[in-house]
Image 1 (cartoon, rainbow, N blue to C red):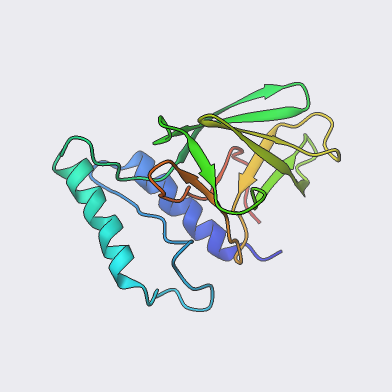
Image 2 (image 1 turned 135 degrees about the vertical axis):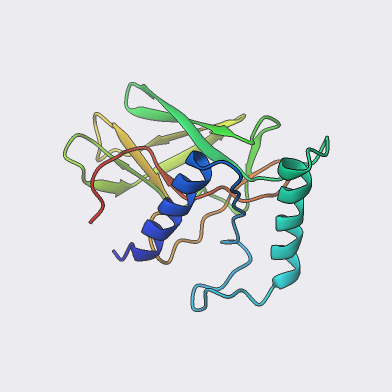
Length: 165
């Protein structure tokens, strides 16, 4: 499974979360896996404008970011994921949530089942008895379908800090 693009997205998320006066908009739902320059510039510009209005200029009532992973809780054989920018709930586009992977202590990730519960996501797999980590949209060809109630897509993320290969 190729993950070079996922490593770049991971670095972008890390930068946004750790460097003041930075921002990021997610375009995986309107982009093109074959070309890093999306042809749909209008929606990209709209999302960038939302970020500027809400975050930079502090305009009230502007939802400017899709869900961003914030923390996890391990409950039995499931991991419950919490998100910033999901206070009004989460939604999926399509029948099932896609692009969730879960691992135990061995560090081997397996495709996972994921279910939205309000503003959290529960992740599990019958192949992982004691889960400790989740990755979302962590492949080059990821086409995730998790959004917040404003229709903005979730950022790719990982809950682990294992060395990337």
